[in-house]
Image: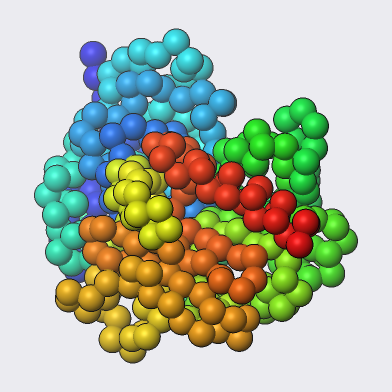
Length: 391
């Protein structure tokens, strides 16, 4: 029997209203409405710090049947600002579950809404783009909630790194014998990333996003990792300046997601906001080095601009018919190239420096949740470190 729930509404900043029922905490919340297309992995999505200040709409209709458990948490808490689903599971049915999803949302104070036509909502966001929204199960007056939505902050220009990063450095040891040491700048790192590195004999020293070059140098690391994270990369001037010093000293660098955007900025490229972004675990990306197509996990609303035509970017990617695939460009640190592209819209999905040891991808190779097609990138990191040490 379904629980008795309070009525709730979701109001988008363009005035569109969706009615439903409270799911999780009863209350009111605001954020950027985005949709995630993964058919599984909702717990990893909820605990991904990259979703900070975003209201996530699950395109999969049925959510909650596998419950939640400590092993699948990607950080210390749920980060989404709000949660939108169509149908809530009535029963938790998984041997790994320790509690129900709705109970966990309520305990952590996450306001959600269910019984929403998420197909119509997703189509609306694809057409109108990601936009601010509000969910309320306290005041169901659409006009009053819309006024609050319009007064809420935009994701463009948002600097959120200090809100998600670790307060103090910590170490994730290598599995077995330590081969290398990596300093990881925590812009919102997921737990599975240092796990992937530990499997390859890497000891990871996770450092706050505000770390200086001297802080990083004190670790005496063999390489530096730039993590995923939320917010607008155009605001991360400190992190870009630190990275430029690392690149000038030829310290090996590997970045993912937000880290890819920081590397792009350090190489002289701009970033721009996508219309509705890439979020889910089914995004096709081509590796221009191997020409293989990978199905990858994504969570980003901003992207790196094309090297030669930055002024012509629209919110949906490069100009029609143009691709960044394999494009090479000059930087202060030598030549670089676009190493990966998204096959859906030709957005830059990876960068590789040709004269210094540095590369990055826009997606999530740690695959939490998601396919393991891109796991080889952690092998590429160890190869880069080994080559740099022996050079």
